[in-house]
Length: 107
Image (cartoon, rainbow, N blue to C red; front, side, top):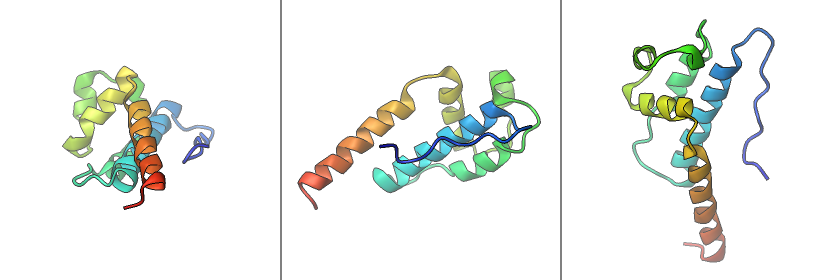
């Protein structure tokens, strides 16, 4: 069972930007609430920017991505998303193991 539903993309919006914002929100949620990491980048600020861009982030080059008005700590995650790596899958697996361990041996 998924911990978050896939996002509906309204007509006229840029799907790549909304999918990237969903990626950032999931990463932030997992790191802050499940893995309970400190100093999680302010992903929500980048999400607000991405969702209002007139240009698709998938059409931008690295320099354009780095010049977006988002917190600098978020830029590496935008790059991870654009490169299509398995970061979110690996993070979800790590979170699954943390939750499973806590079910077996509560702290």
